[in-house]
Image 1 (spheres, rainbow, N blue to C red):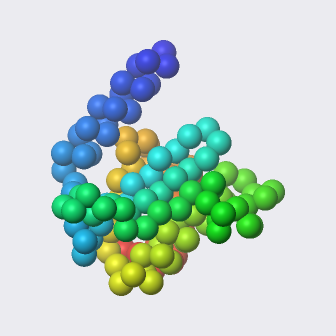
Image 2: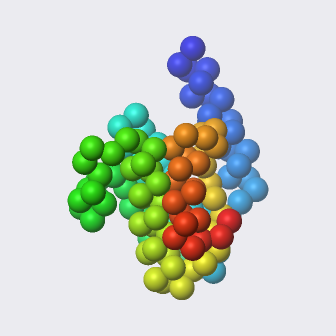
Length: 120
């Protein structure tokens, strides 16, 4: 059963990545979720450069994450990445959920990024 779930996620991921590309003006905001942590980074696919990133393992994010639920942590990570991108002059992004269904922590991260001022 686990192999089927992984295969389905990879199939969705491949389908999504065929359609979206990040540029310097409109980078790809990609999200990686594990059981314990969540990672987000904005990528310029044209130059192959990461513009901004954050995760639950970053020192700046770990300050207020103690005692928070995973969805709340994801929302905070989205706000941090959004703030970093706004500070660099990026207002629009393309959201890459990496084949994971858009609910729970993925949706919370997107909501936090929108609250920071990003549009997607």
